[in-house]
Image (cartoon, rainbow, N blue to C red; front, side):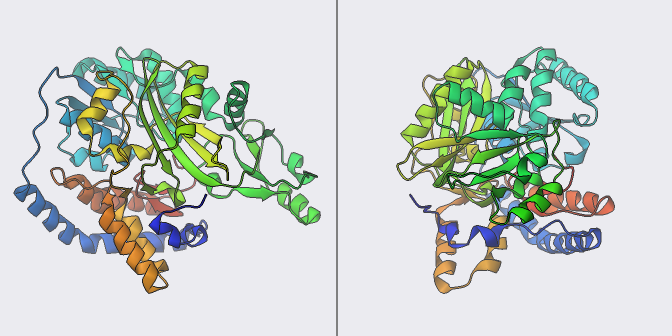
Amino acid sequence: MTPSYPFDTFSRRELMPPALPSRRRGRARSAATMALLGGLAPLTAAASSAISLLDGHTRPSRGERRTILINTTRMTKGLVLARAFHAAGHRVVLADTARYRLGAGRFSRAVSRSFTVPDPLVDFEGYARALARVVEREGVDLFVPVNSPAGAQLDAEVKERLRCRVLHLDAGDNAVVDDKFRFAQIARQAGLGVPQTLRIDRPDQLAEFRDDSGSRWLLKPAVYDPIGRQGKQLLPFEDRQRQRQWAATLSIEPERPWVLQRFVQGVEHCAHATVVDGEIRVFVCAESSPYQLNYRAVERPRVRMWVERFVAALGAKDAQLCFDFILDAEGIPWAIECNPRLHSAITLFGDQPAQLAAAYLGERSGCLTPPLSTSPTYWLAMELERLAYVRAPGQAWRWIRHLWRGKDAVFQRDDPWPFFALHHVQIPSLLLRNALRDGRWTHVDWCIGKVVEPCGD
């Protein structure tokens, strides 16, 4: 099996973000990026204004109106859900931290009210109390967490304190699934395909690591690390002395373990499942792409069957789960990790907003999947960055055809201002914040709506 995306004409090496720069260079990059985005702002504003005036707004469906709380729409996936609930006639309330008070979702017509709450990574108790007040004052019926990897466990813990339904795993299950080693154990016990996975607590465990079978092993953090996830290493080294020296430089400890996972050759896929009342109500599968900034729906029955069996084994009542798989040469799926949160592949449901909302609320039977004819989604800013890697006319043509056949995941004709805000408010504000503090960052993640930096979320 080989990837079939148009953007795979650019190699993954070319699309890798630069290494963490010095503070001085990071601030210079921030200034240059902000200047570029600022220069383009008038053009984007004029286009958004024209579209907003000329395009008639879609009227929401009429029916029983509920109040839905989403705790961030600075991520595109949160914005997609907000628009879906709004299209179905529901009221959407947003609660986000001060860092993202200028997030794109606050500029969306789908959001009724916005609140600023404490950062749960800094003040969990304050965050929990603030969410509880929002739930009580706004009469929230359903809280759908759209969290960062670092916040998934905290939202699982706050679930017990809220007087509304929360579509998220319980704290115990969340902690287990979020750990790559423990996830592999659960899957293996259920008879599901996962690569052999070893827990690494100390650097010296890697110094002498060998595999006489000739297999390669991938080293990665056991739990999410915004910088460490970009530096995955294959073992063993051919040079044993170099491996010992390299292992001595690692900061691995029992409180922050890593895992070694037997490397499986194949094509990487991602999948998302929304579980309501113990049943999968939303499912989508897509081939993975560099930094998950392109999505196209594909049908992989074996992947779906794997996810269904895992959800049954986990026994979760309400959850949002995303998975990464490797499909080998025979099409057999091997799950390499599971993340207990909403996946950005949900952008493929942008043309089915009312159906998506109904599935989340348990108001429709069966499982909602995007048609295979659904337009692929991308983020225009990232696609423009890729122009720097065009080396031949054939690549340029495929790039143009890719943009024409797909659609930007943020832009929507009857709700154009979040697109403007992402590029000219949200990201510039985060770059300025970074420049005034640490100054170092690797790249802008347009999908998640953040600047990837040390100790980030």
